[in-house]
Figure 1 (cartoon, rainbow, N blue to C red):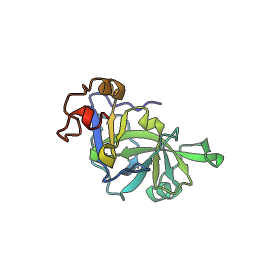
Figure 2 (spheres, helix red, strand yellow; figure 1 turned 90 degrees about the vertical axis):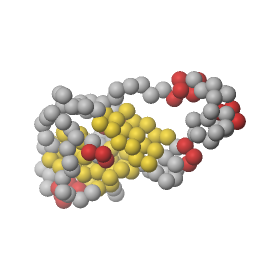
Figure 3 (cartoon, rainbow, N blue to C red; figure 1 turned 135 degrees about the horizontal axis):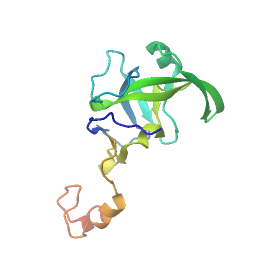
Figure 4 (cartoon, rainbow, N blue to C red; figure 1 turned 135 degrees about the vertical axis):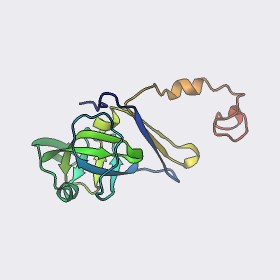
Length: 182
């Protein structure tokens, strides 16, 4: 089910910068009880603890740990069969409000409760409903997220538009052909 903005809401975005290249993309999150559609998704997070989410393009659905579900006092709305690396398991399903950095909020998200070693996994149900990009200029990873998608990001077209004699986009002061265009 695609994530949709409530009527009248404007696109929301955040960027997470890392000081190095990373193998695991993480962001701080908060969770709260799910809410119906409203005029805005930009709301302050609850007073609860800051949690850590791993962005997982291999996960079909988003998930929270059993400890997070218990700590938040969530009640399952149903049960589902979840396919994990360890095989299929039957797990509780919860409806939550997900607070991402920069006050980006998904007011209603269905998540699976799993026995995982992190607080939460952000899966393709969220990633695939938005613009999601990871760049790694000068060995510094940057995760950018925007919902909903409002423009096309095309690295192939962008690369073709770089003339070899133009200044390099890395701002080194050198021509592209003598810098990142080698």
